[in-house]
Image 1 (tube, rainbow, N blue to C red):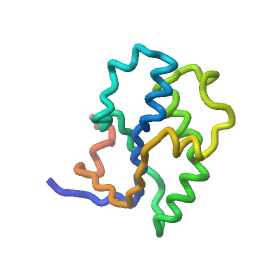
Image 2: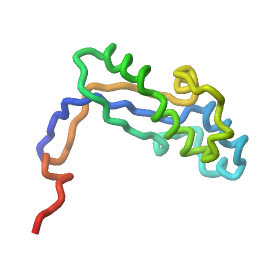
Image 3: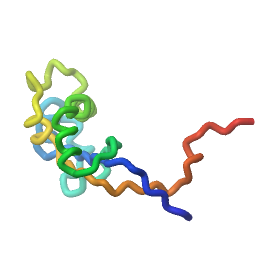
Length: 118
């Protein structure tokens, strides 16, 4: 197996305990689905553009967090009328545990995602 370095950053997002507790208040039936000791199976990875410095990635996130936050909230509470009003970056910070990394490695070659042609 060969490894292929992807010239992209990745945003790794896990719902925070605050988000999960809020979601349970909205729908108590989901509590049995959540293991607060191990939330790794709730993690989502978002590929970001390539940047020269991590600070650029952080700035990009601050300017582009809204669709990611909406996706995160929507996974737990579908009715957006129950979401907080005027979503801001501090909501993203409250409702997610996140990491940005510049080490993105693909274990498949470039043709992996291409459609096979007969």
